[in-house]
Length: 146
Image 1 (tube, rainbow, N blue to C red):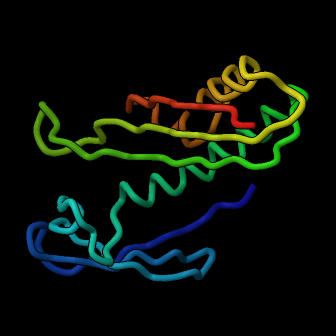
Image 2 (spheres, rainbow, N blue to C red):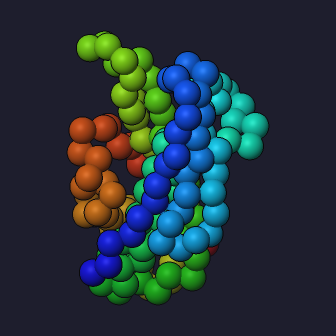
């Protein structure tokens, strides 16, 4: 399996510095980062490690969920997966990821709602990004739509 690469060039201090994150493997773009924007309610054109992690988690979960649904006899018409990654103060000092909430809505034929929910939970447990984030509480809201 391949290795993917991203890099960050950073200048200045934690409080006032900033940088650019480059998606090196795909060459899809370079995105600005800074701690003040990371901690602000509005990102205003900057990304953050949490947003990048949310993108990775939602994509990985969607892939894993589609595989689990297929193995359960379902045919995936559409999945809409959102990952909300929260940054908070760490009681031990500094910051930590305080939680991840996955929301998935799916149009899947050939299975019932109970099978969909069981597959959603299995995908959450077996998605490689979920596995990598076992130190963070991950919650799930899944719903089969008609």
